[in-house]
Length: 306
Image (cartoon, rainbow, N blue to C red; front, side, top):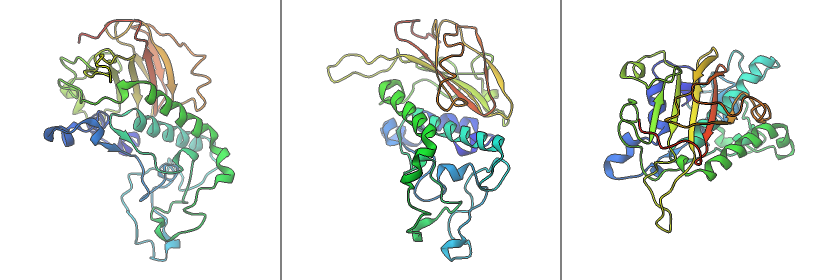
């Protein structure tokens, strides 16, 4: 996921595998999606803030001549190493944090958020703070409010995940979920609304995809034995360095959509005011390195038949 959002080549297919719960790792021996513990950051390594702020580790305070800690962090400083007052870089770093959190919390499996990532915690580029029992490793609770936008955005994502079982399936997606043909419960679409082909998946420069999650086809039952149904969702994902226009799929997927999440909008205030009920065939502009989440209510549309 780190490689995908920093636009590394040949990362789209891997992104898709991990987003759907890593069936290649767990399904063969009968395990379910919740066997996958998903995390972008952990206690060992960069914090989320540092992941988008440093290309290199800065572990000199540990007293080991910067030899300790992982050197291959799949991180990107977005143009400046460490803190900067460049407003463009700051905005991009913050959007990338939201992209990574949205990817984590909307993926199949069990999400794990490293402590303080939702508060913008930094370790000043130190990715091995085992010996730092001080401000480097502590959470600065007195100043946590400075990152209340990120905290509120994380809360919106966790609320969305908790409310919708389509993001918490107990069974892996069926068919060929990576290749986009004969799909019943998931579909992978290009920005032109056509299904992804094998050639699209092997295109090393591919950085965009639309993911349709069919909430009307969850092969599970609740505690009372009733079928579990949910709204359907469409995720428009653009990890390219330029904005792109996505065409929404036809009414087979849903007759009306509502934009819930836009990672360019930290407080989701603009999201609620933009064209918020686009119809099938509508064209939506997705900013560079951004992610949109659209919902089709269960009371609208009909089950997908693709």
